[in-house]
Image (cartoon, rainbow, N blue to C red; front, top):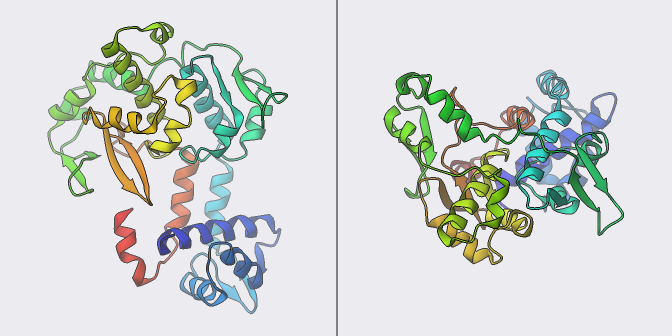
Amino acid sequence: MRELEKAQRLALRIRSAIVLHHRWTMPVEHCYALGSDLGMDPEAVHRFLLQNPGAFPMVSCDVKFSSTARDLVSQERQIPKEPYAAFVIRKLLMLSQKEMLPTAKLLRCECFDFPELTRVFSHNPSFFHWDRARLLWGRLRLVSWDPELAITAREKTLAMLRKVPEEEMFGAGSGIIPLENDGGMETIQSPQELARLYRQPMISPYDRSRFSVVNKELERHRKMSVIHEFLSLTRSKSAAVSDLHDFHQELGLDEQCQDLESLLRSDKRFFTMKMSLGRMVVFLNERYDLDHTPALSPYFQAKRRFLDLITIEESSATAMKAI
C-alpha cells in the first residue's frame, strides 16, 4: 500500500473514531492501534499526527479534532445520505435483468462508497424489498419501476444541448477527460468536440427489450450502454473492472473478466482504461456536469474536503501526482 493511501486511510479511521467520542478527543494510543492495522508503526503514526495539527491537534497524550475538521463533519452530517444512496440503488436495480441484486455485492463494491447501506435497505420499504432469507445477506428487489428514473445523465445532457448553445454549455477548456496519454489527463478545447462526444449514438440501458437482443452488434451496444450508466452512478465516474465484473450476471455482461476488458477497450469514445493500485480501472470519458465539475456524490465531496486538510510526507509526492 502506498504512503499516500495509508495516510488517507489513517486520517479517515481517526476521524471516524474521534466522531464516536462525545468530547471530540481520544487517547493517542488508539491512533497507534488504528495505524498498526495499516502496517504503520507508532513512530510513523506519531509523525503523521505532528504533521497534521490542522486536522488532529495533539494535547498531552490526547488527539483532538480541530475546529475546521469539526465544522466539516457537521456539514457532512447535514447531507441527506440515505435519499442519495436510495436513488442510486434504485437505478442499479432497474439496470439489472431481474430487478434484483445480491446485497453482499452492493456491500463490498467500493466504487459507490455508500454509508450504512443496510439502514438504507431497511428504511425504504417503498423502494426495496430486502429478502434476507436467501444466501448471505440476502437479495434486494425493486418494489416498483419508476419511469422518471429511467433517464440517463447522458440523455439529460442531450436534451440540454437542444436548448443551449455548445459554447455556453461547454466553455473552452472545461472538458477534461482521461485519455491514454502516458496515463495523464488531456483537455478537449473545442466545445463542438465535447458536444459531438455527447451526441454519439447509444441505446437506452433501461429499455426492457434489450435483454432479448439476438444480434451480436446490438448486444454489444446494449452492454456498452449498461456499463456507461453504471459508471455514471459511481462516486468518481470510474470503477475497477473487477467491481464491474462482479455484477456481470445481474447486468447481462461478459462472463469472463478478460472479455469485459476487451469490450471496454474496443471503443475509446466512451471509456478509458488505466492501471491504478494494481487494478485495472475503467473511466467514463463523459464525466463532467454542466458546471464543468466532476459529478461526484455529495458525501464523497465532503470526505475529499476533509482529506484536503491532511499533509503528506515529501516521499509521497510522486504517489500524489499519480492520483
